[in-house]
Image 1: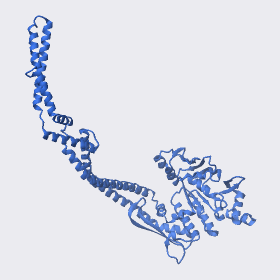
Image 2: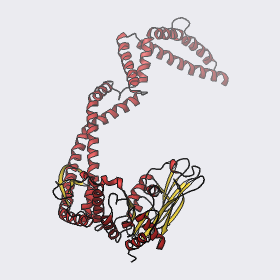
Image 3: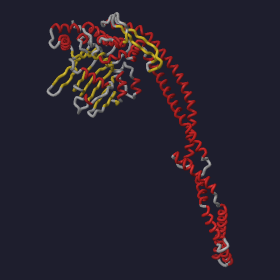
Image 4: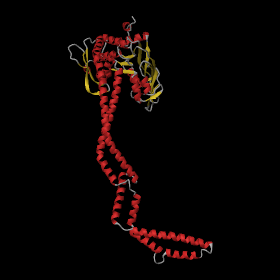
Length: 552
């Protein structure tokens, strides 16, 4: 229930604060007085888009605040899922800054616009005469049948299975797309992997190969240098080893005469041994070095291939090439595993489809069983509001695909007068008939389901006289189970309200303002009398107004 509404700095409204109550509240006012502005402000509360052009004073922010009693709306789960503090007296606030920034709050906790919209749907249902397209909207028609069938829990269970089914569908589609892509890449991956395998990377020491290649490429130079070094150390002429041996023998002869000579002798002997060892190693190494063009070619090809692979795969070093190779093997293994994953996903999807089909069948069965009741009740209300020969024929058929509401395709066919053929509900020609059909449908829902605050914006368009009076009675009956607010130009409906609010404009020297105020007593009688007779009210119009209000 909407208890209180506050609007500041919105369009022609400077500041409005009103208290609302249960039952039927009527809002009246002259054309252009600002009734649509109030609906626009309420739209902000339920998540409609904001526009800075709506700011009365462009330098001051707009604030719309509504207080709701939500104890009977079963909204605790919504609060838990959105991490909001639940309170049976909940305050929703929307602010639009001069810079165009929009902020929304539920019980002073900031919420996103999509959260506000989801919450607002469960609080307020605003229906204007321009929304009669709902008449032929499938979800609206099904919601009527679901209300009769009390399908809330069954539909919730189906929705859970449907979301799971769609998720599995999406997962299977993703796996199949990955498999298709992997199949395209498989040949190229195999080619690259073969290249890396043929490089024999596991036992490869690139540093040793490059060192050997360096040696082979300079074999002549190395042999010449080694030979020259050997000849200087242990050759026939001027051999360092021979000269060092003679020096060692000479010092050895006097080593017994002094510790100093003995130390010289030992040091020379040690040096001689080291020099002889170096000379032998140089000789052996020189013998091993030879120019081998075939070996050079093999090693050069191997080094070039490794460097080419590094460049191709944008890596550095043999270790990174090995890591790249293993990654490719994993990719190829994944391609193989995808087939298993796809088969598994198909089995899961098939199982989910069977469960979903069963749930959809149960939902459809319950809906089919209620069609006669929907027909009877709606026709009863239509007869009451001046369409005694109207016939509603709701039909349900099964579609091929599942959606969020099941597999049912529904069509409301209607015949408004005798002698006419039943036709789709959107083919109704008369605006007055359309309004009455919509009211009958809304009224029938209200008998079977607790609705949020319902706001009807001139749903009575195109009717008058006794029909209008009966439409007012239908609204009155609806308001016994819910809070109903109706904007009307018809005195027959205005007179049946439990509460009456008047919208009016005041034009000053430099500005125009819209106001909304509750009226009662003689002020209300006068307002309804003016709706009957115009600006100048007669005593007869006043008496007629009292009669409409049930005061006589």
